Image 1 (cartoon, rainbow, N blue to C red):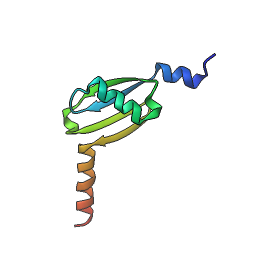
Image 2: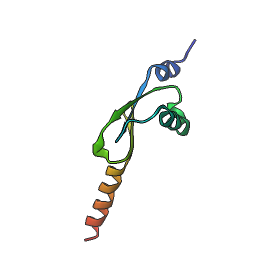
Image 3: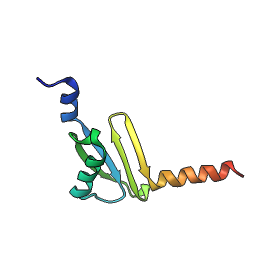
Image 4: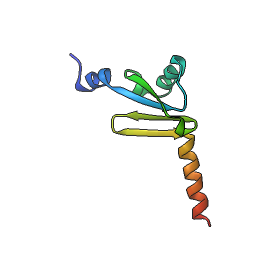
Length: 82
């Protein structure tokens, strides 16, 4: 019998937002680098507004590795130092 956690992970979908369509090889590499995503279905959503990088949405958790986010952080640091 499967645990609730195993059941959830089998049915869970994780959204990968990227500036372009990711290949299956790229999606597999993401699963390899983030073990928590190993048994979930990855859904690729394209948003050119993030410029580059990826945003991973898994349930209520968001990991933002986008170039847009990095540029926003840099801008905030520059304004703080004025």
